[in-house]
Structures are given as C-alpha cells and as structure tokens.
Image (cartoon, rainbow, N blue to C red; front, side):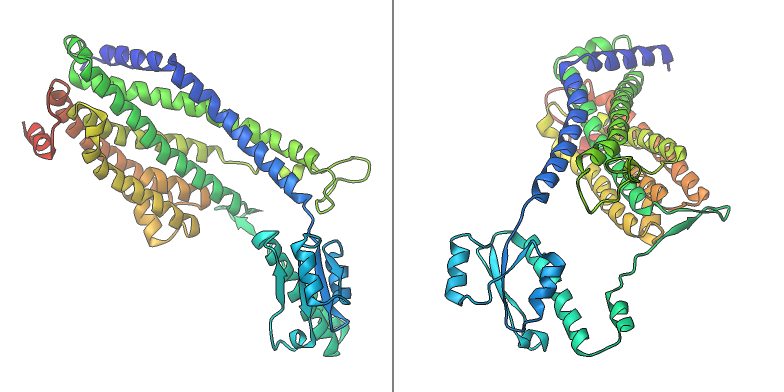
Length: 429
C-alpha cells in the first residue's frame, strides 16, 4: 500500500470539494441560518410577550374576582351586571376574548368553571386561566375554612429544587445536567446527521466517477484500496473542516447571546436585574455553562470513528451501483442500526445508566450516537468508553475489509447494479 498515493487522492478529494460552490454556500448558510433562527425566536418571543387578552368575569360569589384582580388585574374585567346574551355579544364583537361565570358551586367543587370564547388566545390562554382559577378558588376555600395564617402560608409556598453534583473526588459542583443533556442530544444528532450526510456525499462521489468512466483512468495508477482510503480520508477531512467552522460559529453566537438577550429583555420586570446603577439585565444569568474539554475530545473521536465505520459501507454501496436510485436496496440495512442508535439516544437522555443505554453505547454501529450522549450527561466508567472504542475499531477493520473486497470489483463493473447475491460473490472471491 502506497501512502503517497492515498495522500494524493485525499488532497484531490478535499481540495476539489472545498472549492465547490455548493460546499461554500452550505458552510456559510448554516451559521447564518442558526443566527436567523435564534433571532426569529427572540423576536417572536418579544412580539408575543406584548399580547394582551381581556377576560370578562361574572363573579356571583363576591370573593373570587378581587383575588383574580390581585393575581392578574390586566387580564380580567368585572362584567357581573351583564347577562349571558350581552357577554356573548361582546365576545362575538371581539370586545373581550372570552368570559367565565363563577358561582358558589365552583367553590364547593360541585362543577367546573366554564370558559366561553371565540378561540382567541388558544391553549396557552386557556391554561393560564385554568391556573389562575385553581389558585383563587383554593385560596378562597382555605380562607373560608378559617385556618391559621401559618397554614395559609404553607399552602401558598412553592418549593424549588437546588441540585448539586459530586465530582469523582467528592467535591460539590454546580449541576448542569439539564444543559449537558441538551449538549449530549445535540452532539448525538450532529453525528447522526453527519454520518448520513457525508456518507451520502461519498456514495455520490464514487457513483459520479464510475459513471463518467474517470475511475478507469484513476485505477490505472492507484490501487482500489488506496483510492478507497483516500476518498474516505478526503471527505472525512472536509467534514471536520466544515464542522469546525460550524461549531466555532455556534460558540461565537452562544457567547454573544447572553449580552444580546440582556439588552432585549432589559424592560422585562420578571427578570433579575443587576444592582441599581448598572442598568439592564445581568448578562451572567444568560452565560453558557462550561463544557469539559474532554467532552469535546470524545465528540471528535466518536465522530471520526463513526464516520469511518459508516463511510466504508457507503463507499462500497456507491461502487456496486450505477445510479443513485439503485442505492435504496442497500441503504436500508445501513439505516437500521443508525436509526436504532438515534432512538436509544433519547432513552439515554432520560436515564444514561439504564441497561438499554449502556448496551446501546457498546454496540459499535450505535456507539457514536449513544455513547457521546451518555458521556455528556453522566460519568461513564472509563472501561465502558475504552471497550466501545475498541469494539468500533475492530468493527471498522471488518467493514473495511468487506468494503475493500466489494469496492475493488464494483468500481470496474458497469451495466447493471449488483444485488446482495453478487456482493456475496465478490466478497468470497
């Protein structure tokens, strides 16, 4: 095997695709799309935050409306003197978004309050009204039960959970499980999408060279195995370059998101502000928790191993067919383990130490997606990480051997796409 020839193929594959217009546009548009997505989300949130709804209240108890007014006075309007027909007319003429009639039967829990509306506000408004009514009816029932002020405070007090995570050395650190769960899911999805995207790119590259008969010229000076390794390495280097640019853009956006959110939400009374004189919102509450360098290293490692494992199979598929439409019969067996790993990833998010998550992270074809999610969320034993890496390397050696057998015959076969029977014959020979 001539490594100089592999390097030449790698360089050709990398430079040719790096300079292509489609690659440049996609590389730039993804970060811009992320920026547009984040900006649109913030804009919609700010736009929607100003939406106001007016809900009429007919209070036959004389006690519930004052509580509603104290709880959310901007939302509720006392319309007790009006009849049902007048209330319906106000709803139809959009003078109010809806109304609710409250009686002693509701306080005795004999029936549920009925909210009449034209559908304005949707399920979000309905949920808010239900929550408000539940609060005021509960408080009024407690007050009428003549319980002590201390008991009333007990019912009104909410409890929040403060979580702390112990390091392997026994040190208490801030628990960022929620954030790291999202990071693990994002890394798993990136590997999932990259395996399919760059694997498909490799397949199309092989088919293109085969159908244009370029492969005949190339194989006259390069061995099929050298060509296969060079193409895999070239597309892999291209993938790492593109992902590096995207990740750098993501972290830059994440770094800027905190101060930007602080400026945009400066007037939100519900947010925690900095001390008087500082002005605006404290950007620290929007800062992104630290990501361990080891997690990034593991992400790169499992990304490379996952790409190598699947790209060898995608290259073999490209060599066995004459057009992209003929690849479907071979794609299905490859897609099954990828999709299984994708679904196990969500189970790993809920319980990273479950039997299914551990088993899935040790199955080579599922390892890249599942293991990185587990590593991000919990402290995975080093022996499990080492075993998963070893199993992936062994599996890659096997798939590479099979793919090389198929590739060396398939790239020079024209006319009809091969079936599973022909592939087995090529492997045996």
